[in-house]
Image 1 (cartoon, one colour):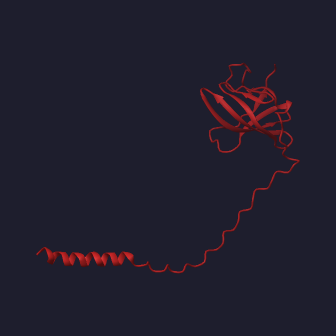
Image 2 (tube, helix red, strand yellow; image 1 turned 180 degrees about the horizontal axis):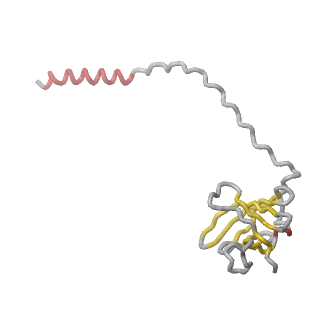
Image 3 (cartoon, helix red, strand yellow; image 1 turned 90 degrees about the vertical axis):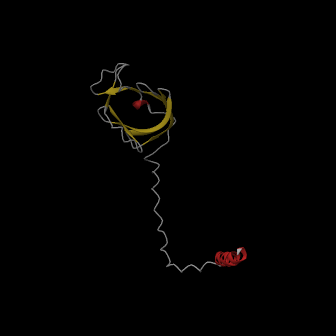
Amino acid sequence: MRIAHAAPLALSLAVALAACSQEPDAPAEREAEPAAVPTPAAPEPEAETAQVLDAIPARFRGAWDALDGDCSLSSELRIEIGATTLGFYEARGEVTDVMTDGEDAIIASLAMEGEGERWTMTRRFALSASDRLTPSPVGEEADFEPMTLKRCET
């Protein structure tokens, strides 16, 4: 009786193995996909509009605070800008790169440290004719809103 069951089982295994060893059907020919159109590269900044600097220009340096701030060291919106550093209420930053962005603005990349953490950020600082400074984010920083600052007397 065992032999009677073994023959169909052996036949089933042989059929299954034969089915697995067959080559797959040739893939159907696909329609030719259109070639990808290259995206034009972003234009390089003109040498006249962007210059890499060694330090933050003197006219951006100093202490700045919110228009309604009192310029005290305890003001949470006060910024102290040096040649290669920025100081905020609870954080300090070292300038890693700085470049001009037109006549009255710079873009500074910063290595920040504060409250036990480290991060990088990039800010654009624009000066107005009335000696006001407006820092704004560069890149994706949704929680930062630009705020105009006044120069503090030292």
